[in-house]
Length: 123
Image (cartoon, rainbow, N blue to C red; front, side, top):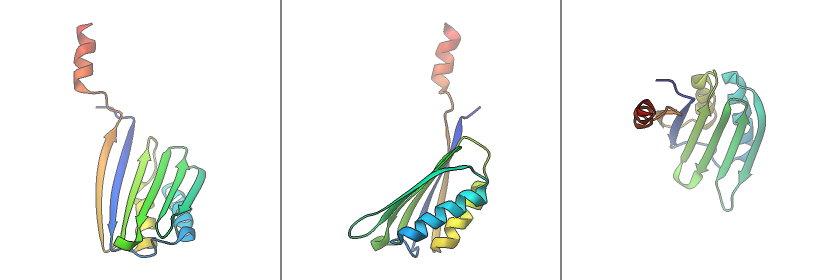
């Protein structure tokens, strides 16, 4: 079945440097470069008292990170509708934040639901 995109969701546990806005900006840019994606824009915001959210808008979609330093946790969301090296992008983020545990899930997006295909066939 054809899909329009793939979304990789990662949880980083017991990670380091999660409250560092500049580290996040740098890691996003380096991840985009490593994956061979085309960077459009990077936006990073530091929350008070702690936590960072950052997104790299890429021509192929986006790479986002949201951190909870007080829990040692980061949520990573990489959505791509193009050909990029997702593993290389994640390796850069793992190297930057050094999580003790990484949980990774892949979701295929934009696949037409089976039911809709069946209804179209009836028309």
